[in-house]
Amino acid sequence: MTIARRCEKITPFIVMDILEKIHKMEASGIDVVHMEIGEPDFNVPSCVSQMSIEAFSRNETCYTHSLGDIRLRDAISLYHRQTYGTIVDPGQILVTSGTSPAMLLLFSALVDPGDEIIISDPHYACYANFINYVQGVPVPVKVFEDEGFVYTPKAIEAAITPKTKAIFINSPSNPTGNVIPRDRMEEIVAVAESHGLYIISDEIYHGLVYEGQEHSIFEFTDKGFVLNGFSKLFAMTGLRLGYLIAPPHFVRPLQVLQQNFFICANSVTQLAGAAALTGAKAETDEMRQTYNNRRKYVIKRLKGMGFGISVEPTGAFYVFANAKHISNDSYSLAFDILDKAHIGVTPGIDFGANGEGYLRFSYANSMENLTIGMDRMETYLKEYA
Ligand SMILES: Cc1ncc(COP(=O)(O)O)c(C=O)c1O
Image (cartoon, rainbow, N blue to C red; front, side):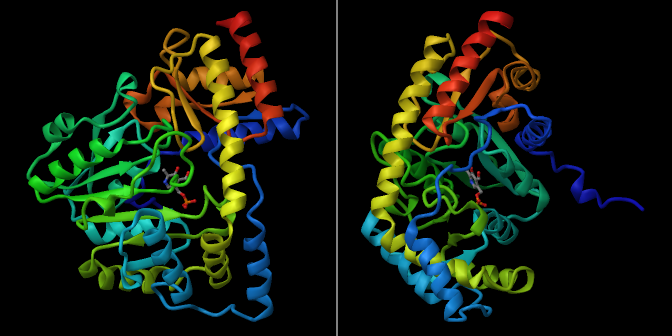
């Protein structure tokens, strides 16, 4: 039996290999500090659990509209108006079981074989795999530490060809934690518009910004797609809820794909998501404050140990630290740190060739654990590096 060729180009997500090794170590009694995984360590806001229970007790457990329960789509529309001042028609919103399925549907509807999508390098590990899966071509554009890992319009221009379909942005970014400033967003939109390209904006870390301000792409153009989800800001990873906002003429094809492949997102979770958008602000504000304290602490400790952080990250919950003075093989380094210091970190190479030599530290962990992790890292560097 042969495996279908479309699977050949799909690369493993290295952080999952690290995580599996950690689970083995933990099963044998070793205590590991988790700084590898991008998963909030908070419980969901109380309105999310209350609404889930309520939705079950009301037997709201049937298939919903394939675009999503209108109560959630209305809440998303209102959230965008209140947060960014943008008008999003609920008819433009497709609710999905996480941002990941939204990405699969979007690329399926947008990309013909050979079409090129510009992505930053480094970038969230799965982007290139989604694009490859639909026979598109991910075109990495290098972004650099001393520019805060933010695209320059010049570098994007240089990567555009007649096959380019869209420019993909992710701000705040995974893995770098950096936020694209307003003027740079405007410049990127100007490049896209001058070439008739779409912009795809993954806004999943919106709401987790500690200095400055994040911007939705719809503040600047309506020739764009927004991807977002409830996994990060609302700590709802396992509940699987996300959405895609698309230009009107894309909605029907996307809906047909959703009807065939997924039918709809989870009915109970959709109502919980609507509750999160309207009733979780006090709790998410508190989470953000806690993340911010951890961010400052981890940056200070890593800098003190000699890691390079030229532009301090101001969003998401990651620090992408330059470890080239220790090793240019981030994969081996991450496993060595795990073996010897019992800290989980993600190698930069997981996020593209230009991420080589970096380590991604997630601070989605308690201050107590982060302190232990940073102390262990200091000892590791003294003993081995
Ligand atoms: C940048 C980015 N986009 C999308 C996702 C996928 O999130 P979801 O849980 O909504 O599928 C992640 C998850 O880590 C992410 O970091």
